[in-house]
Length: 114
Image (cartoon, rainbow, N blue to C red; front, side, top):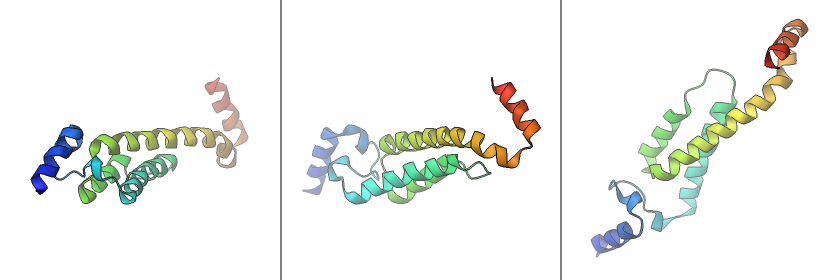
């Protein structure tokens, strides 16, 4: 009986059944939503911090392997988080550069950026 359900679920969503360990999209739960949200937020956080951090893909791979997540959902979530993190960092860097750089250097950088 269990194999029949798996075959039906694979017919409904073929991409999620490509490998046996992936979670099926048919059984979507709040836990799945939280895991994919954790991927998005971890990628956003790692790319927002302007210091040396591990790459976002290492966290993505760890969560994919640990919780058997579907890569067709996890990869776009991670890419969206990374893009948003880099964009937010680009908005914040000019404001905080005044604190860490001398006024002369700050003016030179503004001139180069124009």
